[in-house]
Image (tube, rainbow, N blue to C red):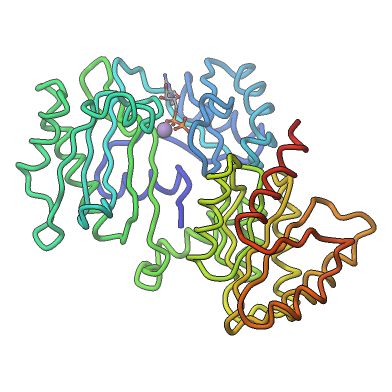
Amino acid sequence: MKLHEYQAKQVFADAGIPTPDSQLASDVDGVVAAAEAIGYPVAIKAQVQVGGRGKAGGIELVDNEDEAREAADSILGMDLKGYHVDRVLVEEAVDFVNELYVSVTMDRGAGKPVAMVSTKGGINIEEVAEETPEAIAREHIDPAFGMHPYQARKAVYDAGVDSDLARDVSSILTTLYQLWDDRDGSDAEINPLMVTSDGEVIAADAVMNIDEDALFRQPELAEMEEEAASGDALEQKADEYDFDYVRLEGNVGIIGNGAGLVMTTLDLVDHYGGEPANFLDVGGGAKAERIANALDMVFSDENVDSVVFNIFGGITRGDEVAKGINEALEQFDEIPKPVVVRLAGTNWEEGMEILNEDLVTVEQTLEAAVQRAVEYADEVEA
Ligand code: GDP
Ligand code: MN
């Protein structure tokens, strides 16, 4: 589960991390009122759960009411990488001289949490990691002992943070780790951690993702989840249908049963040069109605150009899935996007018999099905 920036900032601020003064708004007048309360200049920031909002036109700095109205009007209601913007954070603009990066995440390779610091904040950290990995200092933490103060200081020193700022940045990093640990975080990130002209450090952006399975012991964050999900119609739908669903940025819709199988399909789409639009696991024993709901989900994602179904029958029976696919597709006069199906396991042969090949493309192997779906998506893009 991902918190919105405004929610993550609240969590960070409550723990003592400095954040700019800010207010949430959902219409133009609300933005102006918030800006007046805070004082110009302000930053107006789209509250959608994707990175790179700045580059995509979802963040604007404004100096007065006219500019605020214009920016609010253009950002509210915009489509940002497939996300509808219905709320913005109006925030005191930070007069910064430098942008740092700090984060805590799980390093699965090492089997330990890792804290990271870099002086190359503000820009896409994945690019920094690829091009200049030495610019990111990393410190692994033993979760039984927590982060020792010297570890935070070492990470900050290794990253080359100015010595005048070392104490504040270390303290923020220690707090961030503590939060990550206490609140069952999967990722906690501040990018940029801005350095102001008077040498203050302040969290200008905030990311906090929480382990879904731990939400039962994080009631306060679970409440935020309801609010967080409400910004995205697809995520809301996934909740209603009770699917494990993750929205991605590509155009090949993926439906499968079992997380491992869906991940494999995602990897194969990537392998064949396509880009997955989503992760959607319909779970075990998928009955016809569930299949229809899954199709409804991917069809209502505007980014999707083709769909690949990858079902391995166990408890789930191939004939049941095939019936569900037919029923769902028969409702359309015209199939919205091409669908490719691969069935294996329990009753796959019966399933293949049942599938209406006027409505779907049937492939025998997973590889062939994925390749076909990628081709269909490419044809639409071309
Ligand atoms: P992201 O692009 O979605 O990660 O959004 P961020 O909150 O990280 O903002 C991206 C960039 O917008 C920052 O690196 C800054 O350059 C700029 N920005 C955001 N907030 C402010 C602000 O308050 N003042 C100034 N001057 N720039 C800001
Ligand atoms: Mn950012």
